[in-house]
Length: 185
Image 1 (tube, rainbow, N blue to C red):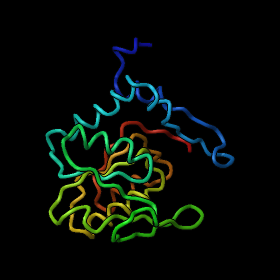
Image 2 (image 1 turned 180 degrees about the horizontal axis):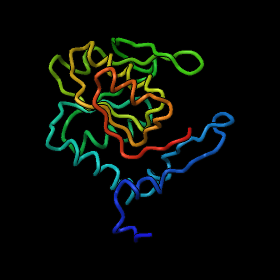
Image 3 (image 1 turned 60 degrees about the horizontal axis):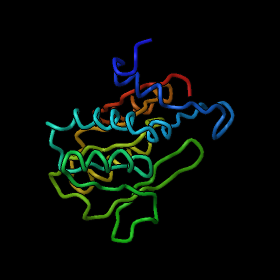
């Protein structure tokens, strides 16, 4: 094994994602990013991967999906010198909103955004911690597009390709960037 300072950044990040078996339900392998966030060096490497990707792209804003997308998205927006747009679970935003409902494995959920969060023509990076079924990111993309923004790319730390969310998002025309992929959910 290579010393940490010579390791590929994505391998380094992967090593700090904890797998929690049978959570939140039997058979699920939960990919926990909290150890990655707790280690300042690993967190810096993570953020740098996204900063380097989007530095020359110059998005107008970074939109983060509730709630772990806020952690990465707000730091990325700060580093890029652009605004941060929260896309929240229904009922959490105090101003006029538009909402989008999407299907979950068992039921549905709704996210919303302030109507003045982006302007027509804005170029936005949409970010979350993980892509599973793709429903949350798809709903975020639809909200941003309804307000006239262009989502230049969806981004996440982790992709779970067996759940087909990333393929569903690509089929809908969203370019995606993820750092690590885990087979088996």
